[in-house]
Image (tube, rainbow, N blue to C red; front, side, top):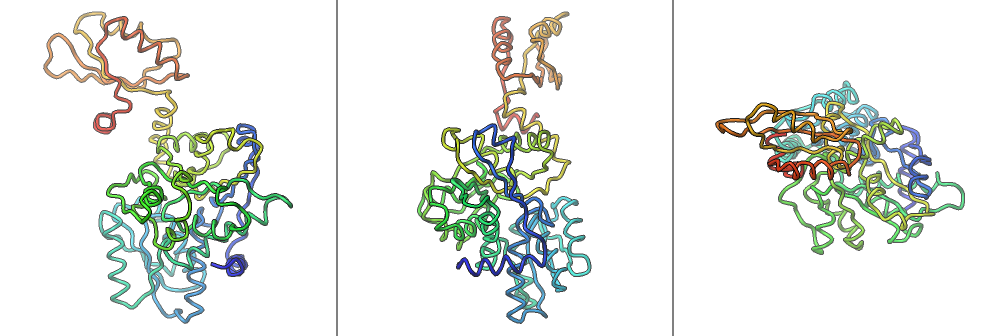
Length: 416
């Protein structure tokens, strides 16, 4: 990838949308005593950077004579929306394959962006089934498959994010640290390639969700690794295998430069940015910002940090779950199974153990056949994590039978 080719791609993209802003964030800069700049890819026409790679792919394919071809992609999210938007822009026919389980909101947005030019096909319950159906269809009709991240033209398009960052920073300023989210690796491969020579290799920090560490595991192994299991909560970055070209571009980085971010920690960032800044982020879009809360503050104090906010396609139906996860991660909410004696006043005695800032958010009686004791599932919210230490001490002093199941994934998923 040549910088002049990326510059040409960025110039061409201007016919589609203006550059996304690079914003100095006062809130985060004060917190970390650093100059924190946010590259707001959530403010693109489709609320993610994916439109860049799709546009560049189409631009080059059409220049090579693919005007009469049918373009096809498989996606349940941002790639589909960028693909649809670009199909409409160029006036070409496109087909988007989506899993049957895709949220209706994403289906509707893809249909709106590609109105009159894109057909949506719902196939399979899982992405792999959907992707295979798309590939089979491309082969059957002699169409053009538009991959989400593993293609040179896609990488080149995503690299325009890096080109804009360099131009938008104040004159004479270069980033000391660039924080990038990683899913399939197209954005990371493109931006690091373009910024080569402007930012040292040590000046990059990559972020992956803990449940989908495809780059980290591949760097540790020295070759690409396909994960046997992926947590899909961070759906925009939950990839089982990083792209071939992308790993080739990133393989010289150290595994320690890939920070694994707990899914629940991402929820803290989403709720904070919504409440404090009024910024709506999807889980993948919050990855880079969450890394700032995890990194040693001394590492970035006084430095210029650029964090790429990769997307803001958030379904607000997920907000209750995000808030729940955020409170649990912050230590402000716990779930207990209590063993209460079956006698008058037992519940009153339990309530007397609560502190002034403790609030019961859930109470479910689980008694089945026990005659002398009954089990209770109880959720408790409080205002400070240290309040739970006093509460648990009260439980123990009262010889109350209890089990904290907050971090027990099996029980939490079954009961909570």
